[in-house]
Length: 211
Image (cartoon, rainbow, N blue to C red):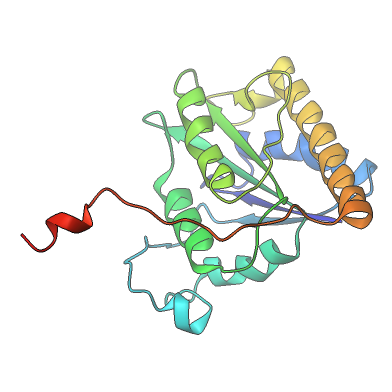
């Protein structure tokens, strides 16, 4: 069982890394393999809606997104972590996730998702909500802790002193592990939930197109 972890902080050994390391320790103790991708200093552009991925099966921009795609497909869970900029995840992570989720056609149903956010003070819950939307639009159960999945720290290393935040990271990893193992057991005994054909709708009325 493997978890893909994406760290979008440009500071590889910064406060976001401290939060993730707390989770990695738990995963290791539980026998869960982890793959860590540090994308914070990479040049990752946003989606241009070219539609190329629909025919080639991969994004037209061959960067960290295409590297992550097979790792995501193989993984039972995905952790995405970001520092908070203006009550939002940083632009690198949003560009990465937009393209990763859009360009990959494999079924993400029942892969477990978890968002981790780190800030000096505010904007954590808004960023947490923003990142969770990638999971919920893809049929991915969202792992929770006993509070929002957030850690506080401004100067490098300060997150190590946020005892409650690090506690929440450990609980998050424990809960995520339990979810992944439970889903794996459920798949083996009951299979996946039945799917009906998706009903695509929009708000343009057909009767107005001829006018």
